[in-house]
Length: 86
Image (cartoon, rainbow, N blue to C red):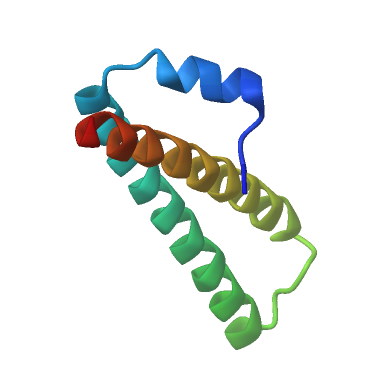
């Protein structure tokens, strides 16, 4: 199953496998941090009664950042795995 569009996959395949490992790890860390931020905002909003009003922008922002970072990390780490095995 392909998760990336063909044009994005072509761009990723131009990157050196060693560099794609570094980029993939960095994007995975950003995705993990974004997930942590969303969970933390859920906790704060439930603990202190602040929900949806002021935090909706942050939920959407960190959700989008985390999703894009996760897809990018998947693409770059897949590129590294393909490049290092050949």
